[in-house]
Length: 239
Image 1 (cartoon, one colour):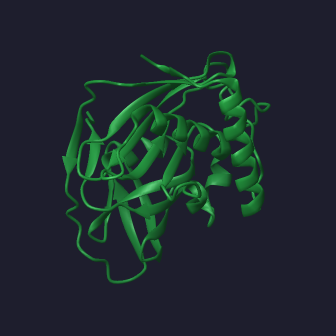
Image 2: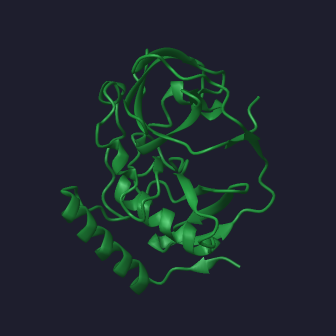
Image 3: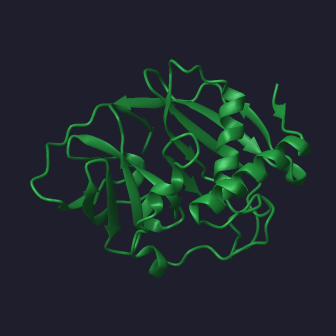
């Protein structure tokens, strides 16, 4: 049965997130804040160096597809509570979204305009868990999705010589996996998943910014901040 997050609990979580955002120098964001335009291709052209802030709470690298960072982290934590993941199976990556727009574009990056989506929690040692999250009337509800088919894939790339590499995303774009320098790489922070290059083959420049972080910029202007993924990755079936 889906768990219902009470208004009081949600307000406490929001206050905690506001305090965290203030401590990090970032803006506090309400899950029901006023709609804001989605990022344009020009704003995506330069990946933000702070994209790694997708993992401030609990140290979990997090990619936010369709909703703003503050709301994204609240949604992620609701999904984690619903899953009840044991400590011996740590969450190594969380993909929050997609959260599709339910109205006419431009669509705000919040749960008013995008009231339903999925959270994929990649667990060390076993297949990821997928949790469906809805927000009817602003109150978040979550339920684990049974029977999701994901394919376990080992990285096959070789170490790169320099910090930058010209590469090409495969025919399903980021969904095909970003396999560079012997590892898969996960998008973190805000992700413009509605950009055409996110789901299609594209020429791109991969630039390593540290042993565990990198940026990716496609020719058509999709910019991503990336984190190195530990071990194999589970990918969705792609036609």
